[in-house]
Image (cartoon, rainbow, N blue to C red; front, side):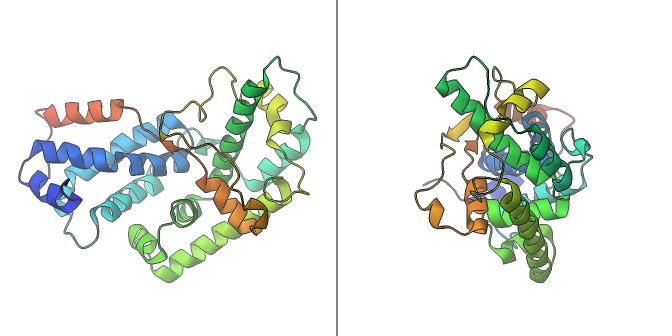
Length: 279
Protein backbone atom coordinates (compact mmCIF):
# COMPACT_ATOMS: atom_id res chain seq x y z
CA UNK A 1 0.00 0.00 0.00
CA UNK A 2 1.29 3.45 -0.94
CA UNK A 3 1.94 5.81 1.98
CA UNK A 4 -0.71 8.44 2.69
CA UNK A 5 -0.05 12.11 1.89
CA UNK A 6 0.28 12.84 5.60
CA UNK A 7 2.98 10.17 6.00
CA UNK A 8 4.81 11.57 2.97
CA UNK A 9 4.59 15.07 4.43
CA UNK A 10 6.27 13.92 7.64
CA UNK A 11 8.97 12.12 5.67
CA UNK A 12 9.53 15.15 3.43
CA UNK A 13 9.84 17.44 6.45
CA UNK A 14 12.60 15.14 7.69
CA UNK A 15 14.52 15.65 4.46
CA UNK A 16 13.32 12.65 2.42
CA UNK A 17 13.74 13.82 -1.17
CA UNK A 18 11.80 10.91 -2.67
CA UNK A 19 8.81 11.62 -0.41
CA UNK A 20 8.85 15.26 -1.50
CA UNK A 21 8.83 14.31 -5.17
CA UNK A 22 5.96 11.86 -4.50
CA UNK A 23 3.98 14.67 -2.87
CA UNK A 24 4.54 16.97 -5.84
CA UNK A 25 3.52 14.24 -8.26
CA UNK A 26 0.45 13.46 -6.12
CA UNK A 27 -1.00 16.97 -6.28
CA UNK A 28 0.24 18.43 -9.57
CA UNK A 29 -2.83 17.21 -11.51
CA UNK A 30 -5.34 18.80 -9.16
CA UNK A 31 -3.35 22.04 -9.16
CA UNK A 32 -3.10 22.06 -12.95
CA UNK A 33 -6.80 21.26 -13.36
CA UNK A 34 -7.74 24.23 -11.19
CA UNK A 35 -5.22 26.54 -12.86
CA UNK A 36 -6.35 25.62 -16.37
CA UNK A 37 -9.99 26.35 -15.60
CA UNK A 38 -9.09 29.62 -13.90
CA UNK A 39 -6.68 30.84 -16.60
CA UNK A 40 -7.94 29.05 -19.75
CA UNK A 41 -4.55 28.90 -21.53
CA UNK A 42 -2.56 25.67 -21.03
CA UNK A 43 0.81 27.45 -21.02
CA UNK A 44 -0.36 29.99 -18.45
CA UNK A 45 -1.84 27.17 -16.37
CA UNK A 46 1.44 25.29 -16.55
CA UNK A 47 3.40 28.35 -15.41
CA UNK A 48 0.96 28.95 -12.54
CA UNK A 49 1.08 25.29 -11.55
CA UNK A 50 4.84 25.42 -11.19
CA UNK A 51 4.60 28.65 -9.15
CA UNK A 52 2.03 27.01 -6.86
CA UNK A 53 4.07 23.84 -6.42
CA UNK A 54 7.09 25.92 -5.44
CA UNK A 55 4.92 27.54 -2.74
CA UNK A 56 3.70 24.11 -1.59
CA UNK A 57 7.27 22.86 -1.22
CA UNK A 58 8.71 25.98 0.38
CA UNK A 59 5.81 26.32 2.83
CA UNK A 60 5.45 22.64 3.65
CA UNK A 61 6.67 23.30 7.16
CA UNK A 62 3.55 25.39 7.81
CA UNK A 63 1.22 22.44 7.14
CA UNK A 64 -0.11 21.45 10.58
CA UNK A 65 -2.38 18.52 9.59
CA UNK A 66 -5.44 20.55 10.61
CA UNK A 67 -7.03 19.61 7.29
CA UNK A 68 -6.33 17.04 4.62
CA UNK A 69 -3.11 17.68 2.73
CA UNK A 70 -4.91 18.03 -0.62
CA UNK A 71 -7.28 20.57 0.94
CA UNK A 72 -4.28 22.56 2.10
CA UNK A 73 -2.77 22.38 -1.39
CA UNK A 74 -6.03 23.65 -2.87
CA UNK A 75 -5.86 26.54 -0.40
CA UNK A 76 -2.33 27.43 -1.49
CA UNK A 77 -3.40 27.17 -5.13
CA UNK A 78 -6.56 29.22 -4.62
CA UNK A 79 -4.67 32.00 -2.83
CA UNK A 80 -2.16 32.14 -5.66
CA UNK A 81 -4.73 32.11 -8.45
CA UNK A 82 -6.88 34.76 -6.79
CA UNK A 83 -3.96 37.17 -6.34
CA UNK A 84 -1.62 36.50 -9.28
CA UNK A 85 -1.24 39.03 -12.08
CA UNK A 86 -3.69 38.80 -14.97
CA UNK A 87 -2.68 36.28 -17.59
CA UNK A 88 -3.36 36.45 -21.33
CA UNK A 89 -6.96 35.22 -21.35
CA UNK A 90 -7.98 37.41 -18.43
CA UNK A 91 -6.58 40.49 -20.14
CA UNK A 92 -9.28 40.07 -22.80
CA UNK A 93 -11.73 41.36 -20.14
CA UNK A 94 -14.51 39.04 -21.28
CA UNK A 95 -18.05 39.63 -20.03
CA UNK A 96 -21.27 37.74 -20.63
CA UNK A 97 -22.62 40.74 -22.57
CA UNK A 98 -19.61 40.77 -24.92
CA UNK A 99 -19.76 37.01 -25.36
CA UNK A 100 -23.48 37.13 -26.11
CA UNK A 101 -23.01 39.91 -28.65
CA UNK A 102 -20.37 37.83 -30.40
CA UNK A 103 -22.65 34.82 -30.52
CA UNK A 104 -25.46 36.84 -32.06
CA UNK A 105 -23.31 38.36 -34.81
CA UNK A 106 -21.06 35.46 -35.76
CA UNK A 107 -23.45 32.54 -36.18
CA UNK A 108 -23.33 30.78 -39.55
CA UNK A 109 -25.41 28.05 -41.12
CA UNK A 110 -22.54 25.98 -42.47
CA UNK A 111 -18.79 25.71 -42.73
CA UNK A 112 -17.22 25.57 -46.16
CA UNK A 113 -13.87 24.28 -44.97
CA UNK A 114 -12.47 21.25 -46.77
CA UNK A 115 -12.63 18.94 -43.77
CA UNK A 116 -13.82 15.40 -43.22
CA UNK A 117 -16.72 14.74 -40.87
CA UNK A 118 -14.31 13.41 -38.24
CA UNK A 119 -12.11 16.52 -38.49
CA UNK A 120 -15.14 18.79 -38.22
CA UNK A 121 -16.30 16.86 -35.15
CA UNK A 122 -12.99 17.59 -33.43
CA UNK A 123 -13.29 21.29 -34.23
CA UNK A 124 -16.83 21.32 -32.81
CA UNK A 125 -15.52 19.77 -29.58
CA UNK A 126 -12.71 22.32 -29.47
CA UNK A 127 -15.22 25.15 -29.78
CA UNK A 128 -17.46 23.60 -27.13
CA UNK A 129 -14.67 23.32 -24.57
CA UNK A 130 -13.16 26.67 -25.50
CA UNK A 131 -16.52 28.39 -25.19
CA UNK A 132 -17.00 27.02 -21.67
CA UNK A 133 -13.55 28.28 -20.73
CA UNK A 134 -14.57 31.69 -22.08
CA UNK A 135 -17.74 31.61 -19.98
CA UNK A 136 -15.69 30.92 -16.87
CA UNK A 137 -13.58 33.98 -17.68
CA UNK A 138 -16.75 36.09 -17.67
CA UNK A 139 -17.01 35.48 -13.94
CA UNK A 140 -14.79 37.53 -11.67
CA UNK A 141 -12.13 35.51 -9.89
CA UNK A 142 -14.04 35.03 -6.62
CA UNK A 143 -17.12 33.73 -8.41
CA UNK A 144 -15.09 31.74 -10.92
CA UNK A 145 -13.19 29.74 -8.32
CA UNK A 146 -16.37 29.18 -6.30
CA UNK A 147 -18.08 27.78 -9.39
CA UNK A 148 -15.10 25.58 -10.29
CA UNK A 149 -14.77 24.13 -6.80
CA UNK A 150 -18.47 23.77 -6.09
CA UNK A 151 -19.91 22.73 -9.46
CA UNK A 152 -17.05 21.48 -11.64
CA UNK A 153 -14.98 19.64 -9.02
CA UNK A 154 -17.95 18.97 -6.69
CA UNK A 155 -16.03 19.97 -3.56
CA UNK A 156 -18.39 19.95 -0.52
CA UNK A 157 -19.39 23.44 0.59
CA UNK A 158 -17.72 23.38 3.99
CA UNK A 159 -14.48 22.12 2.46
CA UNK A 160 -14.62 24.71 -0.34
CA UNK A 161 -15.18 27.45 2.24
CA UNK A 162 -12.16 26.16 4.17
CA UNK A 163 -10.07 26.24 0.98
CA UNK A 164 -11.08 29.83 0.26
CA UNK A 165 -10.82 30.81 3.93
CA UNK A 166 -14.33 32.25 4.03
CA UNK A 167 -17.45 31.25 5.94
CA UNK A 168 -19.71 28.50 4.53
CA UNK A 169 -22.46 31.11 4.18
CA UNK A 170 -20.18 33.38 2.14
CA UNK A 171 -19.20 30.46 -0.10
CA UNK A 172 -22.83 29.51 -0.67
CA UNK A 173 -23.60 33.11 -1.63
CA UNK A 174 -20.74 33.23 -4.13
CA UNK A 175 -21.63 29.86 -5.61
CA UNK A 176 -25.29 30.80 -5.90
CA UNK A 177 -24.39 34.01 -7.73
CA UNK A 178 -22.01 32.22 -10.08
CA UNK A 179 -24.56 29.49 -10.81
CA UNK A 180 -27.26 32.05 -11.58
CA UNK A 181 -25.04 34.00 -13.98
CA UNK A 182 -23.89 30.85 -15.77
CA UNK A 183 -27.35 29.32 -15.97
CA UNK A 184 -28.97 32.53 -17.25
CA UNK A 185 -26.33 33.02 -19.94
CA UNK A 186 -26.35 29.43 -21.15
CA UNK A 187 -30.14 29.22 -21.04
CA UNK A 188 -30.40 32.25 -23.35
CA UNK A 189 -27.65 31.22 -25.73
CA UNK A 190 -26.51 27.59 -25.56
CA UNK A 191 -28.48 25.05 -27.57
CA UNK A 192 -27.06 22.24 -25.47
CA UNK A 193 -28.78 23.64 -22.38
CA UNK A 194 -31.90 25.06 -24.01
CA UNK A 195 -33.02 23.67 -27.38
CA UNK A 196 -34.63 26.98 -28.33
CA UNK A 197 -31.43 28.96 -27.74
CA UNK A 198 -29.71 30.19 -30.93
CA UNK A 199 -26.11 28.99 -30.57
CA UNK A 200 -24.78 25.68 -31.79
CA UNK A 201 -21.07 24.87 -31.64
CA UNK A 202 -21.04 23.91 -35.32
CA UNK A 203 -22.41 27.34 -36.28
CA UNK A 204 -19.42 29.00 -34.63
CA UNK A 205 -16.85 27.16 -36.79
CA UNK A 206 -16.51 29.75 -39.62
CA UNK A 207 -15.91 32.68 -37.26
CA UNK A 208 -13.73 30.66 -34.88
CA UNK A 209 -11.44 29.52 -37.71
CA UNK A 210 -11.39 32.84 -39.58
CA UNK A 211 -10.61 34.85 -36.45
CA UNK A 212 -7.87 32.46 -35.37
CA UNK A 213 -9.68 31.59 -32.14
CA UNK A 214 -9.50 27.94 -33.29
CA UNK A 215 -6.73 26.55 -35.46
CA UNK A 216 -7.90 23.20 -36.93
CA UNK A 217 -4.25 22.18 -37.34
CA UNK A 218 -3.38 22.90 -33.69
CA UNK A 219 -6.35 22.13 -31.46
CA UNK A 220 -5.58 23.34 -27.95
CA UNK A 221 -8.04 21.38 -25.81
CA UNK A 222 -8.98 18.35 -27.92
CA UNK A 223 -5.30 17.57 -28.53
CA UNK A 224 -4.27 18.29 -24.95
CA UNK A 225 -2.62 15.28 -23.23
CA UNK A 226 -4.99 13.58 -20.80
CA UNK A 227 -4.81 10.85 -18.19
CA UNK A 228 -8.06 9.23 -19.22
CA UNK A 229 -9.50 10.20 -22.59
CA UNK A 230 -13.11 10.96 -21.78
CA UNK A 231 -15.24 11.99 -24.71
CA UNK A 232 -17.08 15.27 -24.32
CA UNK A 233 -20.51 13.73 -24.79
CA UNK A 234 -23.95 14.36 -23.40
CA UNK A 235 -25.04 11.79 -20.80
CA UNK A 236 -27.86 9.40 -21.60
CA UNK A 237 -30.35 11.15 -19.31
CA UNK A 238 -29.33 14.67 -20.36
CA UNK A 239 -32.79 15.47 -21.70
CA UNK A 240 -34.30 14.72 -18.29
CA UNK A 241 -32.06 17.21 -16.45
CA UNK A 242 -33.05 20.74 -15.57
CA UNK A 243 -30.99 23.57 -16.99
CA UNK A 244 -28.59 23.90 -14.05
CA UNK A 245 -27.93 20.16 -14.07
CA UNK A 246 -27.17 20.38 -17.80
CA UNK A 247 -24.76 23.26 -17.21
CA UNK A 248 -22.98 21.25 -14.52
CA UNK A 249 -22.86 18.10 -16.64
CA UNK A 250 -21.27 20.01 -19.52
CA UNK A 251 -18.52 21.49 -17.36
CA UNK A 252 -17.82 18.14 -15.72
CA UNK A 253 -17.56 16.36 -19.07
CA UNK A 254 -14.12 17.76 -19.85
CA UNK A 255 -11.23 15.28 -20.03
CA UNK A 256 -8.81 14.80 -17.15
CA UNK A 257 -6.02 16.99 -18.48
CA UNK A 258 -2.44 15.89 -17.88
CA UNK A 259 0.14 18.60 -17.17
CA UNK A 260 3.43 18.57 -19.04
CA UNK A 261 6.30 16.55 -17.65
CA UNK A 262 8.29 19.77 -17.84
CA UNK A 263 6.72 20.73 -14.53
CA UNK A 264 8.28 17.75 -12.75
CA UNK A 265 11.58 18.29 -14.57
CA UNK A 266 11.66 21.92 -13.43
CA UNK A 267 10.71 20.99 -9.87
CA UNK A 268 13.50 18.39 -9.72
CA UNK A 269 15.95 21.01 -10.99
CA UNK A 270 14.75 23.36 -8.25
CA UNK A 271 15.19 20.71 -5.56
CA UNK A 272 18.70 20.09 -6.85
CA UNK A 273 19.57 23.77 -6.79
CA UNK A 274 22.03 24.87 -4.13
CA UNK A 275 19.89 28.02 -3.75
CA UNK A 276 16.82 26.03 -2.77
CA UNK A 277 15.90 25.91 0.88
CA UNK A 278 12.72 24.53 2.34
CA UNK A 279 11.24 26.85 4.95
